[in-house]
Amino acid sequence: MEKFIDLISRRVSDAFAAAGLPADLGKVTVSNRPDLCEYQCNGAMPAAKQAHRPPLELAEAVAAQLRGEAMFARVEAVRPGFLNFTADPAYLRDYVARMAVEPAYGLEREASPKTVVVDYGGPNVAKPLHVGHLRSAIIGESVKRIGRYFGNKVIGDIHMGDWGLQMGLIIEELHERRPELPYFDLDFTGDYPAEAPFTISELEEIYPTASAKSKVDEDFARRAHDATYLLQTGVRGYKALWDHIMRISTEDLRKNYDKLDVHFDVWLGESDAQPYIPPMLERMKAQGIVTESEGALVVDVQQPTDTKEVPPCILVKSDGATLYATTDLATLVQRMEDFKPDKVLYLTDKRQALHFEQVFRTARKSGIVPETVELQHLGFGTMNGKDGKPFKTREGGVMRLERLIGEITDYVRQKITENQVVDQTAVEETARLIAMAALKYGDLSNQPTKDYVFDLERFAAFEGNTGPYILYTIVRIKSILNKYGAAVDAQAVLPPETKEAKDLMLVLTRFADGLQAAYQDNAPNAICAYIYELAGAANKFYHETRILAEPDQAKQAGYVALMDLTRRVLETSIDLLGFAAPERM
Image (cartoon, rainbow, N blue to C red; front, side, top):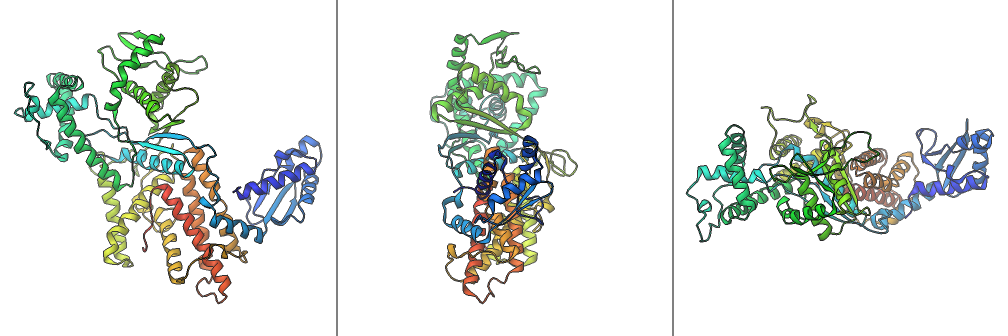
């Protein structure tokens, strides 16, 4: 189904051509002066420069070609050469009624669906999720859902940090505390315990303790390196401990990501890429792209067109250790073999931009990823406190994600309880849904690449550009539909008779525009901007229209059908953002 504005642009372009002017100047946009018209075209201005004729004369010639056109109620050429358009109510009604029954409300999905891998997790095992993990999870989940809505096969990969020195630190710290455990007896041949010798809480305390100790105790640091080596060379007891760490950590990660309604299709980590590293390095050496620099193995990725220096990509340090770049390249080898993607998208802090530039260039130079496969890094900004600095706890530490979710849920629960509009049995679920809307919309309504200030009171407000306001609009519409008490006829929409009805219909026609912008730019904020506008138009229509009190049954059915379509578009949109609406609030 062609977008409403594209239908108008195509017709106006034909009129430009019929008037002897370049058709590509007939592009139509939503009016920036809604008090004068609904759509506008400024193409007569550049046409006048080319033709050396007055722009108003050319605009009038185009307008003459559009007189009597069914899609327009009014076409005007105004000084100095603008074309103003007002949509015909009946034509608009027909478009909206068709939207109501079309799959995806008429959105044109990908003609040739792609396979896309989205890397949007990146947590380290044995460490709790904190606010630094929030944006990756929230933005990535929405980008994944939007990609799928357009018909693509999108694979979400958590890509855990589950290998390397952090594991050696944990194992060595545990060795100091519990040397009697069988895992440290290299001669042990029996079965290891099925239960881990630690809880998730103990594990989360062990890692920071070991990390701090390694910075002041050289002997401990050396032993941690040795433990890492023993793990990576397959020592049985150390591998059994690693299995315990992975099981307990993964269970905890799943629990916390579930609270965010964030779900990964693939739970792979750096450890899964390790088998690919040796053959990958050998292949690169055989290609002659690896050189030695101060004992390290590197790939030169500087290009003649670069305006600033791009450092070489280090694959192996002088001490023989591999780095994140090595693992990321090996992960690309794995992904190309397992998924054969058309695109791989990474979501991380924007400060990692150089790292991914080096990795991508190395992947191209080595042939790991062909030019036909798109590699993209979406670097996002930080979530800051009201002081403009990265968000912290009141005590000054990094806030655990679980605590942040708890605080915003407590805040919303208190507001719900004070208002006393929700049955006591539904308070917890309602608070959870509203809290998620506040948190996610508060984040996603910002451009991903920009920093933003986390403001609990503003994000959780039931008025203004917030998630709870969007939910309130949906709940209000649900209430109307429930009171209507009959089946909704989606085709019952009537031509708009009031400004509020027409404005709501016009905003509904822009659904595909909002989603297309979000899809093309990996920018969920475009959906947020759209549904805020839609919710505003819906509330104005609600306030100015007697919906359930309308005595004319045909009109009432038309109003209800319009409200139901609005609800469905809003609920579809918030699902793409990763949250849902309660029944009451």
